[in-house]
Length: 159
Ligand code: ADP
Image (cartoon, rainbow, N blue to C red):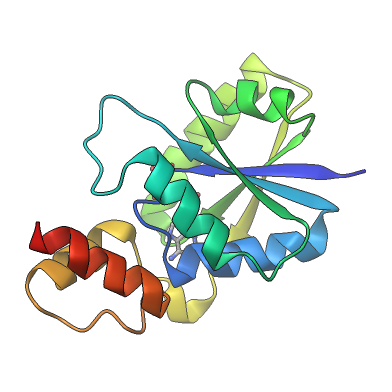
């Protein structure tokens, strides 16, 4: 069975992430989304909230699972018995960082390989950070995230 992990912060999940998840679910028998608990960052949503949002957003894809993790992506992959890490590539600017991380991960765990999926064109500009910024200044985010995620963002920003 080909198991892949898709690690990230997902604060919160966007339609760009969901596109990568849906496409990778067709390439692998199982895709385990890893929601990173990173104590160095202050996310808008807690790790449990991000996990629950992702569970709801992917409930129609039967071979996708959502878990949280701390530490190295390669260790998370091993714990999931996965030998593939999926990452999404948007612009050239993603490339340098992703290449460096893939090569570091390969050094740490030669049995775990990184696969990149290029973003679908219509999502190439999309990031969790810009979605939060647009929402904060009252812009329309309905094309960037699922409706219930937009509601959750607005609710959070009210507090
Ligand atoms: P991280 O903090 O690890 O970069 P993110 O949640 O920002 O976590 O992103 C997780 C993965 O999803 C990364 O590989 C990132 O490049 C990819 N990604 C983010 N936004 C998009 C998008 N709009 N289209 C395709 N891939 C994306």
